[in-house]
Amino acid sequence: MSTRKPVHLAVYDTLADWEPGYATAQLARAGYEIRTVGPTREPVTTVGGLRIQPDLALADLRPSDASLLILPGADLWDAGDELAPFARTARAFLDAGVPVAAICGATVGLAREGLLDDRDHTSAVSFYLAATGYGGGERYAEADAVTDGGLVTAGPTEPVAFAREILRLLKVYEDEAVDAWYRLFHDSDAEAYAVLEKAGVL
Image 1 (cartoon, rainbow, N blue to C red):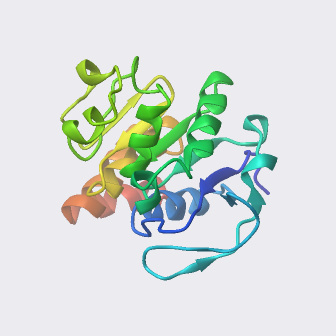
Image 2 (image 1 turned 120 degrees about the vertical axis):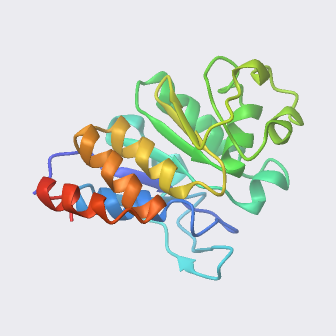
Image 3 (image 1 turned 60 degrees about the vertical axis):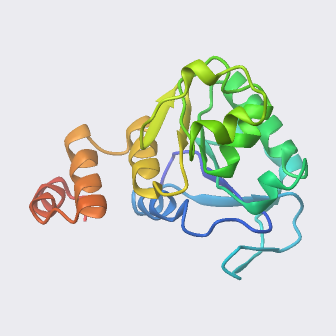
């Protein structure tokens, strides 16, 4: 039985199915409970048509109950302020010293919330975030994924790098195993398999 606190995965309509999957699958295999948190307890539908029944509503989520909050991308991040409460929750998590991981459109929500003004970060492209008028443009990094100040950010084409940063941040495996895991799933590096087998990751 794991004594680790659960990882909370934010779910909402139009969620980009492919973005959190590598991270949640590996975290679950490593013994973390994955709990889904929606705007309410009402079911949501991903961009791929999957229907998800949230485990809890956002109003009931407390940083003290979690190891990490994952914010996937979704069309709704660009459609208005409907998901802004999730960005405000990310602020509460970071203020409490609990890490947050945001990918794709979720990075825009964090930019609007001011959470990228003083942290190194990345996203799809720099001008995507610049359109928000945020103050962190000088901290934007051309990278697959970035971790700074307890916050992981990544663009929509980097779900494997996003997971890599999460595995490092939570110290799920030794660095050598995380690097090998990334090489296997991102680069199809067959030699990485033996490293992971030896580390007991696969």
